Amino acid sequence: IDFWYPDYSAAWSDAGCKNELPLPFTRGDRPEYATHLECCKNAYGGQTSGKCLSELASPPTTSPTNVGNTGSEYYPDYQKAWPDGVCINQLPVPSGRPTYSSKSSCCSGAYGGQSSQACLCDANPCYSCKCGDVTFLQNNNCGATLIANCSR
Image 1 (cartoon, helix red, strand yellow):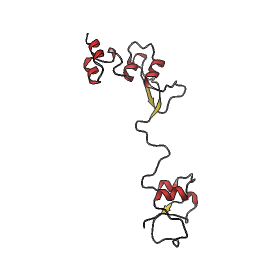
Image 2 (tube, helix red, strand yellow):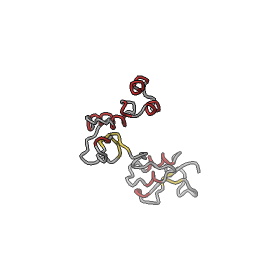
Image 3 (cartoon, helix red, strand yellow):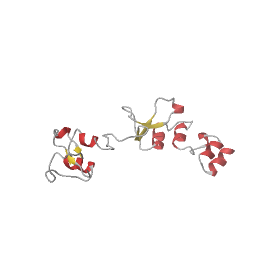
Image 4 (tube, helix red, strand yellow):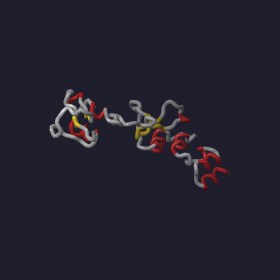
């Protein structure tokens, strides 16, 4: 059939929408919806169990897919020694760790005196000559002035 209807045979918290024959009702006795999603939104809008939505062909999740499990805030990675330290945004953020809105601001705040510049180079491979050799800088499309200065 080309419409969806609420399934009143189950408890509201466990019910979903169907589009099966034979119809368990006379047409006009129940609401009918053009799509499965429209039926769920209208008939089971406040359903905390999520049963109706879970039956969709591509159901939404309560926690959207996050490739790499990363967040929007950066924090110092204390797993590495100071000279090799970088900032990361892996979730969850460890308790008590300072957080920053960008990788470069994290590097400035957490690794400001780092002579290796490992963190700033991780944030921007074109930060300085310490980030890599001339080939590395060229491969990262760093500016001609930096490459020339690092070639000396």
